[in-house]
Length: 237
Image (cartoon, rainbow, N blue to C red):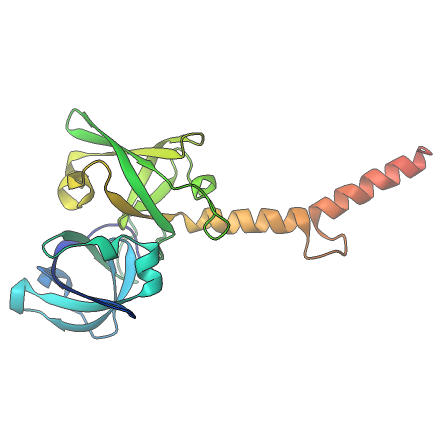
């Protein structure tokens, strides 16, 4: 589990692709390796990855992770180049303050930056989600104004949603711009999106309540149908 509060901007030192996935070495990461062990989880641009090797001193500290093809399909990590910066966060410790929101670091998909507008010291960004497919339903139902969304691993507050255009917006204050890579990304750049998992659980619960578990008439929908049927019978209809 993560909080979405970025601890360090690392740098891609090397990248190796093969038919099974990819291996990344992320340098400039010494500040988050003090208590690191092989097998630990570190979120990289919002994707939970397992440390398979690390060195706390060489190259300013580095760690190596392996990405399966599923991760490459779901995220923008396959598009990263050597030298690119990445947002890094260690898994949440039980002893720390919880300053962001519940982030699984299980990326739901990607979005494209379509607008960047300065607003004083702040920066307003707008993102467009891809069209829904049977394999990848739309993420828009889970994104609400003033709700949480995770963008490249950073917990951020949504400032606006346009369901027709499939877009949502947010604002980065000056401090946030300095702490994450998002403020440096140009229009047309891809970002990783994870929606609030609480919304997903609520949707599933509501659908289950409305539809029941099968054809036995259970659930809210079945109950309403039965009540309507009983009323009509009593009225002789």
